[in-house]
Length: 79
Image (tube, helix red, strand yellow):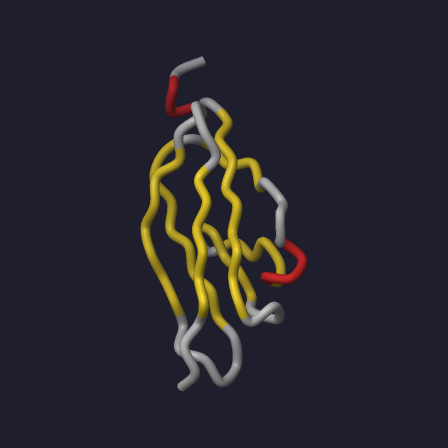
């Protein structure tokens, strides 16, 4: 198995808790549902988006590595 095919983990800490969290366009769930959860992903580059009504959307690119989990903390700003 190559490094790019290895499994990595993503931990997302986001507010508000009802924000919807997407990775590579796929819904992972609400921020509240994902608290303290390590979501498995393939290693490599990904796109994270977090949206909630009444808040400015957030998007970023990130890379995962199998040697350690990637943790992203987001507090959406009100519109």
